[in-house]
Amino acid sequence: MKTKEEQIIFISKQAEFEGQLARLYELYENKFPEFNIWPFLVKEERKHEEWLKQIIPKIKDGTIYFFLEDLTLQAIVQAIGYINKEYELASIEGITLVRAISVAHGIEGSALDKNFFHYLDSQSPAIQEILDNLNQDTKKHRDKLLQAMNHPLSEEFWKI
Image (cartoon, rainbow, N blue to C red; front, side, top):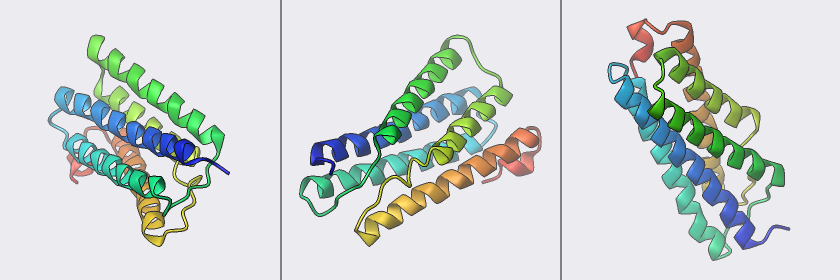
């Protein structure tokens, strides 16, 4: 059984992951302002970060308990490290549009492949709905980025 502190750390790391992803997408937005997918993704990731932060008080007061795997926490910490590394590289060395799309697609796909949102199991239907929405939104992001990878110059794929 995980302690409240362990659960809070986990949810906080997930929120940090979403926040760092929004930060990376903001950088991409500044570098490639002609493509409106970046502002959309920034808004989405900020929304996800806020959803996760809203869960923390419910863990603290004991109304929600999460069952989680230690391996998922490690995967999230690694993903945050990767996002920060990509941010620094893009800031210092620059980045091409194709690379930005590829990195973003890889991060979104990795979150799904590593089941970031399925290792959480809440007894609360409202919280479970948030987790399901996080997963569905991430699938949409990955799919939209895949379309962009396959057709990077086609404006129709950049319409949100």
